[in-house]
Length: 329
Image 1 (cartoon, helix red, strand yellow):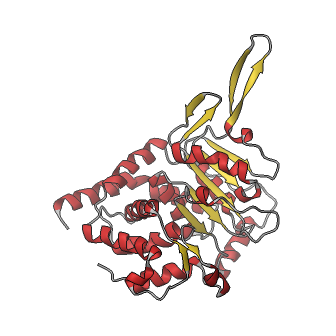
Image 2: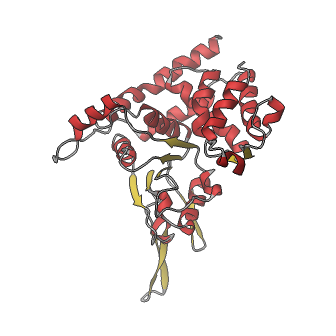
């Protein structure tokens, strides 16, 4: 490890002073779900939107609300329903008959942390209204364009697509999410802890704000400086290219992949690996960081073929085979 890398590691440890207090505060309410919490932290550190998927009752919404309460910043929860309109998100122009002028009324998107709850319960027109806000971090009302505040992060939850009363998210919108986190059931021990903590009609536990937006923005600048060796960069390229042309890497995935990851997947995988290294207190990225971040970055960007669906092969299984088959630098 060179002196510059040692200096970066020291900067990471100093800049990440808020990580442990935030995790401790969240753990007062949320039992387990470490992968979920770390994924949300990666989104904060990389300015990337996060999609959470899991069956109802797994504390997806509660985790996001708890994390938002620990940060001294704006927060809005939007409950997506089939009758929601785009104007309910971005706002609208209101006509004043006395003055004959239009005034702008901003919608709930004009905040810092946005919880899009059950995003797949709204039709495609509403889901598409998020695209400009998520990608450009701006909103257009009439002939005026308004910048959204910084930080601006969309944390969306959805139930699995096969659940009744849901809509499939447009692929263009799904790709705007940096990470897709799968939320699973807790262990038996964790569920007993949840029962002891939440098995009451009393008000839920309160958390204290322990992080300032300035801390997050400063940490983002450190994350951008984290060192990535050329061999690790080549490894990331190989991982993404293996989702497009697995035959060139001698992977037994012929006919299983319809579409692989785009260059956006390459960029996001690099950023997520940097953020993972930051959470580990390191100023450099290792191949293990890439492996840890890979499933969350790639699972929603790999479109499996009809043949794979018939054989019940999932994108997660494809990702496992890619990481198992590629040589590690």
